[in-house]
Length: 539
Image 1: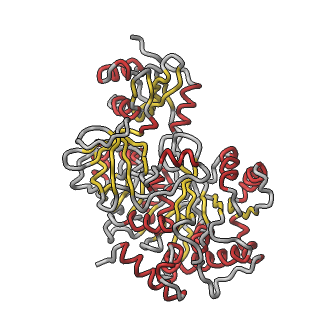
Image 2: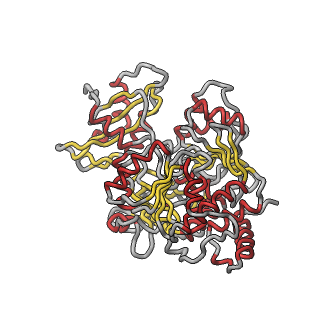
Image 3: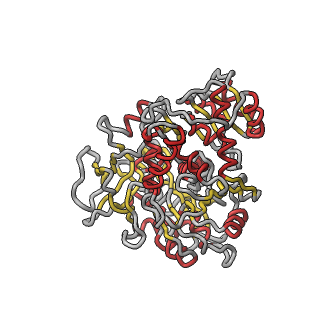
């Protein structure tokens, strides 16, 4: 019988405590990650599916210890902010693990980040060192100089060995740092705001992170995760979790130093046969629409599906192609983990699942009163030990998300049924205010997708001086089919009251801008809507 994640963590904690002669409670997630690698030295740790290069646990552990030692010798201390910005090549893991070993506060930024975002982030985070791609040296230098951080060293991944030698880094007698408060020291600064605006920086402390790792994997069967395939950069939560978990759980990490294009994705699946991954409903739909026999999905045993609501017909069609357990997960960066107990066999479709006993839950209406009856909407509030501690240097946003007594206000509207199944309705912040009516983009999108020639749709709100806002639909046609705009307007009018019609019109797109985590980038779609020639209803 395979050990569960709690048993595995306790085992690694005891072994690490013995190795470094410290009390078990002083062992943090960095100790456990290193111990997991040292325990299985010859096992494969990571594979780059784009180059087919791979690396063992002992190689990753040794390189990471040498860098961590060099950083300590260079004067870095627990809690110092460290930037890592690169694709998922094999070198990315080295500063990633070094930060966890030594108690540094790591912020991972997608290498495609705009210079304007970097300037804003570096002013907020005040990094002590930046690890990045050689081709991004100038971009990072400019962002640092804009914040008068001219003395911050920038190390290209190709030059890490020079940094290690300069500061006499060594794995000999290496010992992770344990002299810091795990409840107050940030392990991760995670960029959040998803597809809706400029990034905020969520704080995940070392103790919260370890709780999150445990609670992320508890609902998963122990015998199905042998190789996990990453789809996004480590700016995004799922990849961050998979990196730190791979030696703790353990499993092989399949990643890519190149953007995961459809041909590369097919190559990675057919060649390495991963058993688990995290996908968006959008990607599931692409597999459903792909030509038959292009890719063999039979290797998958567990697929986490999140980032957007799932449509029943897409799930049903995908299950015909792949027999994996699908975990339709509700979550957000600030929650760190899925906060509902979802079971593919027993959870009603459309529900996120039932509450976990370890967390507390509330639904709260617009007047601040708790909703106790079933089938009545309210904002979901949760309380637990795996959630974020606030936004870095942003007291206003923190107070909007966290109450004084520790409740996290998700900003998401839910209702519960008579059996305590919770159902996601809409993101509160995405609702469009048309005069005195709140309009749900998700509801309009579900209606428009009923049109047989619509492949995908995104509804956004644009400002309007007469009505406050109005909804606009961006539509991707299916396989180049002809779509008469009036058919879309009539479809909405048939099912929705006048106040919830497409008063801002619609326009057609050749494709949608996507976030690196695979979500439609709503703020960019809104910008497209402002600049596009829109079609309006004739009646």
